[in-house]
Image 1 (tube, helix red, strand yellow):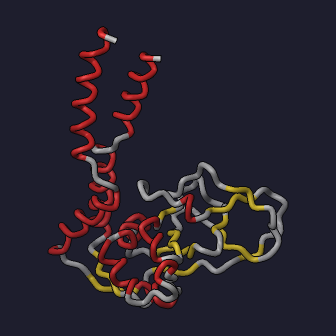
Image 2 (cartoon, rainbow, N blue to C red):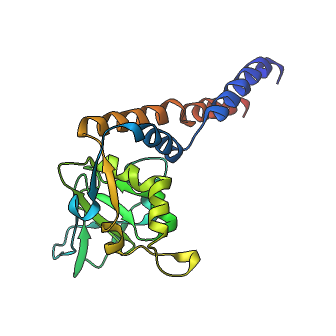
Length: 219
């Protein structure tokens, strides 16, 4: 309608600017990690800074929710708490998730979904296609998740992954044998903050909401 023509053109221009600026979270991570290459870092083997969370026996009657790879959001560093399935088989050994645990997909093609559990996920369990780790005091969980999402880490893991090309798996000992370089905790936090702020700044969420509101006017 004529009365909405000017607003439509202005909104379209805003959308095009946003789409031109847009980068995925993992693209931003790659850029910021690359910028940090000249910073002083110390080298560690992953097995010395992360501990594998061994399965525990669940006997309670409390409802348990399960985290699958599909719940690991590539556009967030944190596990998506929406859409978790309720797990019926409570008996037996399961990977119990605690706050700040790092969830790493076993499948190479999903490694870019590596995520951190926050308090909303505590008490859930992860399924058999996810490794659950806790980090020690030399690395922040979000920084480790970012390293696992990086192109550099995927290249390292490609060299040790096993199985057919379409479903390559990463064994725990392969993950734990990888060497990484870490800056100080303060620098890690600065990089995390920069990545999250940039992701929020160029997010398409706000412009999508504005677009939906405009479309509602036309109905």
